[in-house]
Image (cartoon, rainbow, N blue to C red):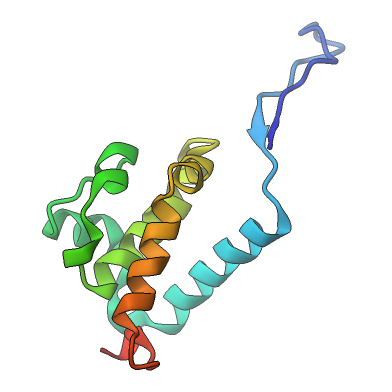
Length: 125
């Protein structure tokens, strides 16, 4: 939910707060889980998510990541897109909301599920 300051008038006594997204606990848990996964699986080198995306012909941006054909991507690249979406929020309020709203996050999670058809951890593959 976007929080927009409609109470203050912009004077020095009542400065207007910049709009921001107030994410639900579920989304905050999701981002915590993403960072936890990155920390636990250093062998995947996901901190280099922008390079991983670039190697797969995907730019770190809303359009390129949202339109990427995930059916041909491996788990490492899909995780890199997820981390890229989470990191984008740090630079642009509402970026992560955009990836949720346009269905990208669901597509990425569904791809990971498809890669994990045998019930093993996709990080081990």
